Every structure is written in structure tokens, then in C-alpha cells.
Image (tube, rainbow, N blue to C red; front, side, top):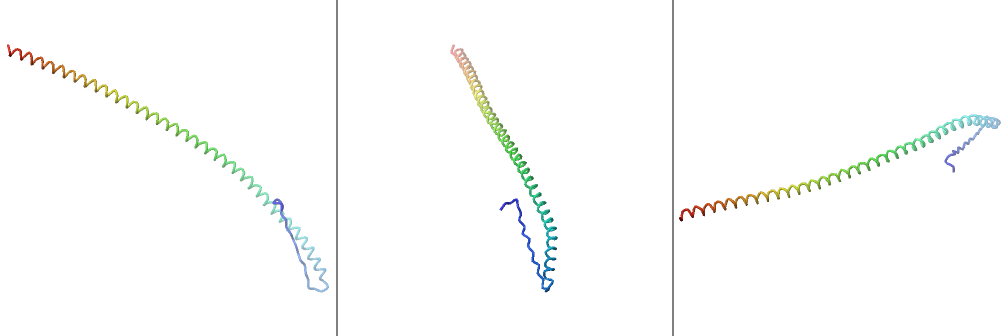
Amino acid sequence: DNPNHTVALKQAWVESNFYGLRSAIKNFGIERFKVNCIKATDGFNFVLERFHHQQHHLREMSHVKLAEFQMKKDNLKNKVELIKEKSNAQWNQAKEAAKSAKDVAKEAAKTAKDVAKESAKKRAEAAFMKAERVASGSIIHAEEFED
């Protein structure tokens, strides 16, 4: 019933067909069995003790290994969490950098548009002034020819 106990049952039968010597042979067999049984029991107990010691050692080793694996598991979990956090931080930095680059590009496009508008306006004014000069020169030439 108890897993910490081992029960060993030992039995022997001594029989003899010699008439008249039966009880002497039986007594000799029983005494011989008792002597051998003591030696066998000592050997059996030695083996059981070694087996018990080995089982105890293996149980202790399994607890130690389990604790080591638990520590490794916890370390790996921590490393995974750090990697996730680092990855999220890098992802957020990349998003911010992309947003910043987008804003810079929009600003540059707006500036380029404004510069192009100003440049076009200046060219249009210059062309208009040139056209006025040409037109006024034509009018002056026309007046000279009419006089």
C-alpha cells in the first residue's frame, strides 16, 4: 500500500523420499535455507537501498533541472518582451520618420509651388512690360510715320 515500502515474501519447501532420514534432511534443508535467506535478504536490501538512493537522486536532479528550465523559460520570455518593446519603439520611430519626411516633402512642394508661382508671375510681368514697350515703340514709330 505504501510506495516507500517493499514487501518480499520468501517461501521454501523441503521434501525427501528417504524413509527414516526425512526429518534430518528436512531440518538440514530448513537450516540451510535460513543461512542462505539471511545472505539473500542482505543482498536484496542492499539492492533496494541502492535503488532507493538512485531514485531519490534522480528526483532531486529532476527538481534542479526543472528549476533551471523554468529560469531559462523566464529569461527567454524577458528577452522576447525586450525584443517586442524594441521592435515597437523602432516601428514608432520609423512611422515618425516617415511622417516627418512626408511633412518635409509637402512643405518642399508648397515652397516649390510658391517659387514657381512667383517666377511665373515675374516672367508674366516682364513679358507684359516688354509687350508694353514694344507696343509703345510701335505707337511712337507709327506717329513718326504719320507726321
